[in-house]
Image 1 (cartoon, rainbow, N blue to C red):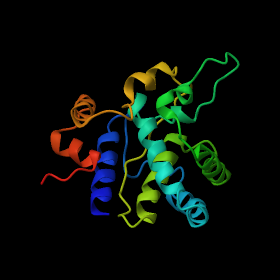
Image 2 (cartoon, helix red, strand yellow):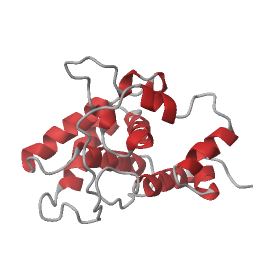
Image 3 (tube, one colour):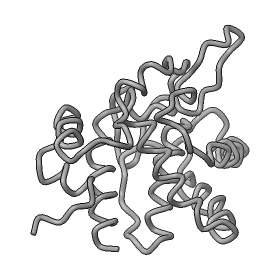
Length: 194
C-alpha cells in the first residue's frame, strides 16, 4: 500500500506541471466554486462504494490523459462529425473505462457552479479521491487546468503511451523524457530501491 501511495504522489507532482494553461494554484476556485472539492468527493462516494474498481480506473484514466498532451481531459473528448479516430481509438487506451464518471460529476459541479470548473480539474480531483478512498492520503493538488477543445489523433497516444510490453529501461526513458528524475520514475513504476 505504501508503494501505491508513493507512486500516486509522484504522479500528481509530475503531472501538475504538464498541463494546458498556466496559473495553477491551490485556491484557484476559491471565489468561483469554493465547494468544488466537496461536490466531487460527495459525487464519487456512492460510486466507490458500489464499484470498488472505479478508483483504479480513475487513476488509470488520469495517467492516460496526462501522459499524452498534458492534463487537459482530451481523453474525454469524443469524435466530432469528421469521425476521425481520436485518442480513445488508440490500442494503448484499450481497457480505459469509467469516463462517464467524470461526466456525471461534471454535471453535479455545473449545477452549483455553471461554467467554472474544467473537466481536467475534475479528473485530477477524482483521481485524488481515488487515492484517498483506497487508504492513501488526500493529496493537495493545484487546480486551474484548461480542457482541450479537441482530442488528438489516435496516433499521439500510440506514440506517447508505453506499450504493455515495455521493459524497465524503456519505461525509465519515457519518464525521463517527461521531466522525471530516476527516483520519481522508479516510484511511478512501483519498484523499491532495494
